[in-house]
Image 1 (cartoon, rainbow, N blue to C red):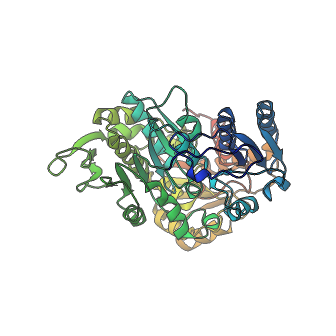
Image 2: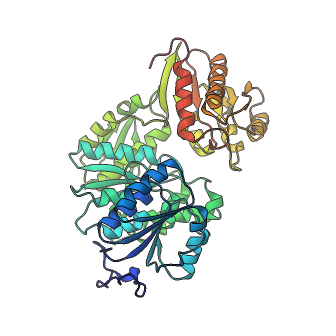
Image 3: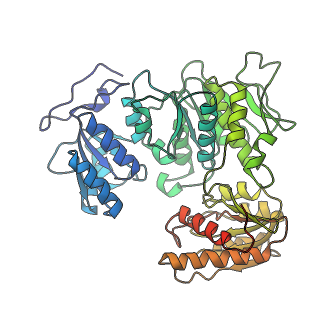
Amino acid sequence: MTAAEPAPAPGSGRANVENLAWPGLDVAGLRILVAGFGISGYAVADQTMQRGAHVLVVDGSDTPEIRERTQILEVLGVEVRLGREHTLALPADREIDLVITSPGWRPDQPLLAAAAAAGIPVWSEIELARRMQAADGPAWLAVTGTNGKTTTVTMLETILQHAGLRAVACGNVGLPVIEAALDPEGFDVLAIELSSFQLHWTQNLDCEAAAVLNISADHLDWHGGAEQYALAKGRIFHGVGTACIYNVADEITRRLVEDADVLEGARAVGISLGTPDLSEIGVIDGILVDRAFLAERRTAAAELATLEDLAHLGPHGAGPHLVLDALAAAALARAHGVPAEAVRDGLRAYRVGSHRAQLIATIDDISFIDDTKATNPAAAAASLHAADRVVWIAGGDTKGADLDVLVAATTDRLVGVVLLGVDDQPFRSALGRHAPEVPVRRIDPGDTDDVAGRSRLMEDAVHAARSLASAGDVVLLAPAAASIDQFRDYAERGDLFAAAVHRLPGAST
């Protein structure tokens, strides 16, 4: 951070944005290009325009939703240019001081590459929020990982609120971070979910505490490989002031902590499903215990909650992945000084959000669970391990992921498999090698260009799964694949699953 440098008036030389003083960055007079007009892009344009920035938004899409956002902001003086041609280069008719990019835009995207070549800073919305937030603004508690991020930050939000704090889940879930950080009423704490895309474009986080839940292969095409993906996740630890929380069972998360540049006094805190060592939070005889955030941690442990407090999160209690999420949320809350009772009360009150291991209905003692958000093998494995006997609805666009480890590790739980997806061969091949005795039903892809066709597809899948299941079984939608080959998005896939389940005779939630 340096002394303030005034931003130039439009038409003069470019501002050296990196040298402008922060926290409390003053964006008045800055010429900002917002690349991508999604939820975070809209929030950036709105918040910076209100504070005197000159804002240009570009987006390659031209949908009714984007048009509606455009009409709102253009009235307020924000210029919006829609169409692919506006995303291929920097604008020729104006100087740009700063580019704020949508997290989905790759580093080699032409406009972003041109900005980098011209020496123009490219930041995420998260970086901008951190710099604009006042020095006395809310504390940041952040979470990343391949799987479990949303569950953890929403658990954390509930715990913080039960501690009497004004807290909100934001980032990759809920509010954009810039809206939460600059909220006029002021939050006490932000529970922030961060994706690897957001972290790639972020240099300064300075979280009070941060957690990396797990690392498995995902988005490797975007990042250019597994190492780059892991390094992007590890950025969350840089500048941490109190605690870096890692998964004891995931060696990569430990290495990310060891390599992090943190403030003096910050500690590494492990989370584990087993008995915790010193400076860890774990489980002893069904009790979640803390050996990290109490003065007498060398000789004692603090009881935070019990597995019974989490039992409502699954038809047979909370699965191991949900217990780990709860441990991470508890560790982050404890790093902020939250008392043990608030952890317990928050976890008792917590309810799983839509599409995340959500119990839809029970019919003839068969549980139907929507975990459509399990879009990769690691997430699906966590869901499958939460039940003893499963009829698995799987399939979609695997994005080249290896399914062998997933199938081999869960074969003993599979009662049957129902396959969606335009190309079912990756699943058929893995099942043939590791679970040849498990019955498989393939759902004819048919025509899924409209909602009726997609609804028919899921209706057939649910009926097929019901025919394979017996009392005590779980019918689980955990596709281990993306939805884009047949559905609008993962949420639609889950919504259609729930609707089909509710149409079965005898459904009761």
